[in-house]
Amino acid sequence: MSNTMMSMTAARPAAKKDCGCGCGGSGSDCCEIECLVHPRFFCGQLLADQDLTALVDWVKAKGALARYRHGWGVVCGLDVHCGKGGTVTVSPGYAMDCCGRDIVVCEETPFDLTSCWKRPNDPCGNGASQPASTAMMMFGHGSPSTTNNDDQFGFIPRDQLQAVDILIRYAESQSDSRTALARGGCGGAAGCEYTRVHEGFEIYCRPAEGCEVAPDPTIAWQTNYDEKLAKLRGDLDRLVQNAKYETTLDRRSAIERFMAYVTRQSPHAFCFIREWLCYLQDTQQEIDPKDVQKQKVAGEELRATLAQIAFWIVQDWRNEYLLKPCRGCGPDTGIHLARVWMWMRRDSRGKENLTTVYVNAYPPFRRMLSNDEWQLPADKISLGPHIWQPIETVMTALQRSGVSATQVPINADINLVRGHEVIFTNHVPAEVAVPLTMYTTFDPHCPDQRRVVTFALGDAANGQNPATETLDPHHETTPIAEQTQATPSPATAPSPVAAPAPVVAPAPVVAPVAPPPPAATPAPVVAPPPAVNLTDLDGIGRGIARRLQNGGINSVADLAAARPETVRQALGSLPVPDARVEQMITQAQARM
Image (cartoon, rainbow, N blue to C red; front, side, top):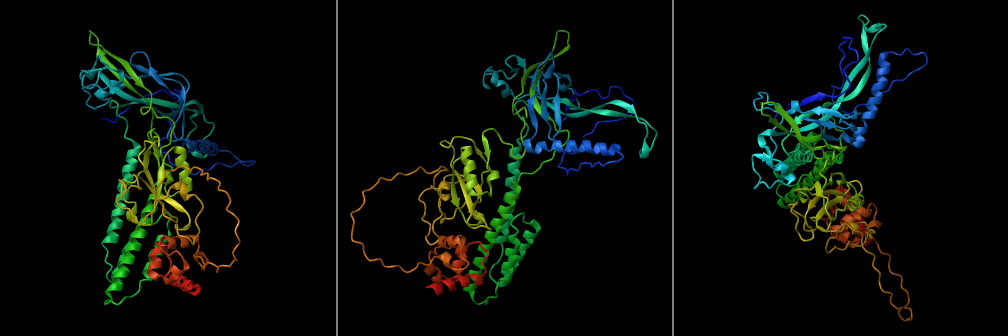
């Protein structure tokens, strides 16, 4: 399909009186976000044309920022409807282009479709192509199996029908020329200059393919996301799995290769990744080569730690990729107004007669005012903005969107969320939607707060999760509503939840009122010995206590009897020094 476009300028005349200055329009640069600078005036200042132009440019640049707040496209009006003969008419209206420039059509403007017709013998391939045969089924002239393949609309031969898209873009023209009194420091003889710039528009057409629309930007965005994410995970897999861990030298080499990769990638927000690797490098102790068991344990611990670091690298990349950018565009990017089908036929004397058959001025052939960052079909919801947000915030947003999800806490392991993560989900009632699973993990800075890692389709409670390859068998599936209830005491291990629940607030439970028991002789009160909780130990807060409890260390006695390796495993990816682990165990033993 040819990308050649036919246009007809419908702006104000280039000049009311051409004085031969050779002045042209502007707007040939790309539309990127720019820093704002406005002129400053003072008493006695000699104003030059550069000062006044700078003021105008500042006003235009400031107004153009509206495209980042509201998007771009048709705001109101600009309807395309049938005209006389082979024309269509664009009604008055207002639009904003992708550069943030205002496009105002003050009166009905006809557009001639003659230049849009593609002739078979056109060597340049200009014009439109044939529409798909299924494009006209909306008119009820049969089904694809019963409709004559040579006729469209039930009576128009296929070779006499073509479709084009009608677009509008910003255009400027100048008028009101005057002779300059002096050139000053500009040089050259005095001449004439235009004194008015008309902010107009240009209507043009582009070849179309039946009912096909332009490539969905959402599909391209997600394809690029999936490909880059798969490559990143593949690189990290090779770093973790292909490394050797048999000797101290092997383990240090594995850390060095990992550090070199992180240096090339440069973390976006999780800056602690570099420091973590440096800490691992400094804490590698020499082990007797003959002690095979210690070598094996040290290798397994390092492999598990590097896998955790890989998880944070992936999450750091995903968080950066899902940020809302300030996208630029080309100044000639047009706004789609409608798709038009044309009929070209000849009369008895061979004269061509072009008429308009059908105008479709509705999405997707018409771009209404919208942003590009999360451009979605009408039945889709983007889950991207919820990644790495607190679960309480995400729960509220999902409830407002009518989306039901089940929370599954996971540890920082790269393989736990591997698979076909869901970025876009259907906007359908919860009772007919595919179960949505929301995976969460702790915030490395605030272990008491859990954040959303990713979403996947499937029922985690029944083990049916096609979007995830592997799941930790020790995971608890906790309803989001239950996650927001009062936090249990650190001294008590959290009880497992039997089955996950959708994102709904729990219904109040009203218990029956029982009669008071008969009075009894009170027994002597014996004061129990004061209980010692994990949080009573120095340096152990609620977050660390919860991690220890999840790892099976539920009390001070359990901590006193635990081995350092068991405590480090319970702490997970928290970079706690070995000396600190020993100190925690020693404190627990002293309290017994």
